Image (tube, rainbow, N blue to C red; front, side):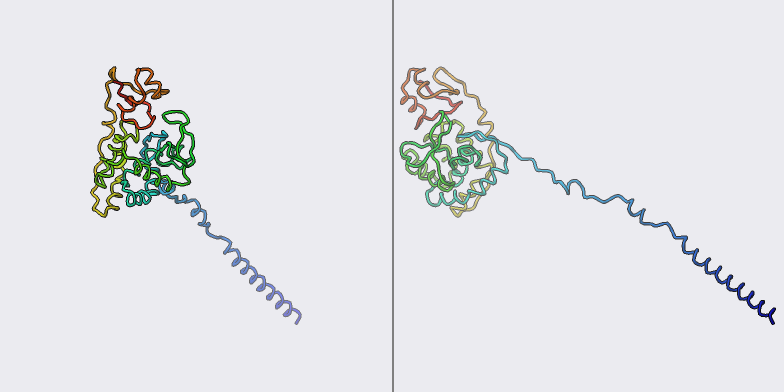
Amino acid sequence: MIKKGLLCFVAVLFFSCGSNKSVIQTTKAPTKRPTPQVVKVEEKPEVKPAPTQVEKPKQNQTTETLEATSKVKVTTEIVLAYIENYKDIAKKNMANHGVPASIALAQAILESGAGTGTLCRKANNHFGIKCHKDWNGPGVNHDDDELQECFRQYENAYDSYQDYAAFLRGRKWYDPLFKLEKNDYKGWAKGLKKAGYATDPAYPTKLIGIIERYQLQKYDAEVLGIEYVETKPVATEKVEEKAVVLTSEMHEVIKGDTLYSISKRYNISIEDLKKKNNIIDNSISIGQILKIK
């Protein structure tokens, strides 16, 4: 009996150990895991946008020099922004006072350096108008043909445009301009020089060049309610570069010249000098050619 019990115990113990051994084998099998694939994914290069999408290259801007009461260099973008800001004021001036919007904008662009010139920034003077005897408003000193000349000062650009129209309307020598066709910008450009608005011989050419380059005639057409026909710009550079052959009867203005000093040099009165050169006030500019005899 004891032997049978002992045999049963040994048999149970044998089968029990075998069962445990098989369990150990099954737990070891899952430890052989496949190599993780995450590493391969991380090693792929990051896709970046093309450089043209991140930093868009700037477009080339045409640069030009505007010289009147200030000499500045401006880009096409600056001039276009100026036109956008003041075209409505120029159109309103044309409707109320008869000054072509194209002429007003062209003169303002040239005289103020498209709003960037010193005189424009400190005095809101967009047309380079000097104080003159009939001016009762504030003024600022600014170097032009002579040192520290008095120029009109305005509270804002609108007042400058308004006074500009009144300035032209209030002087009889500008009367012929208002008898021209309303959209005759070429006639106006030449007439302004002839009437003495500016002393620069190339002033009409510069105004016409600005008008046609930026198609300012379209604002005249809008005010007049007529169809606008685009005009191709003329080669103004060739006109401006024509050389002037000086004679003994002519004088080219240099830095430091005044009407007084020139009159003394050539023994001619200031009044005769002004009359021969159609000069209204005492303004002359460097490079200007004056008739002496």
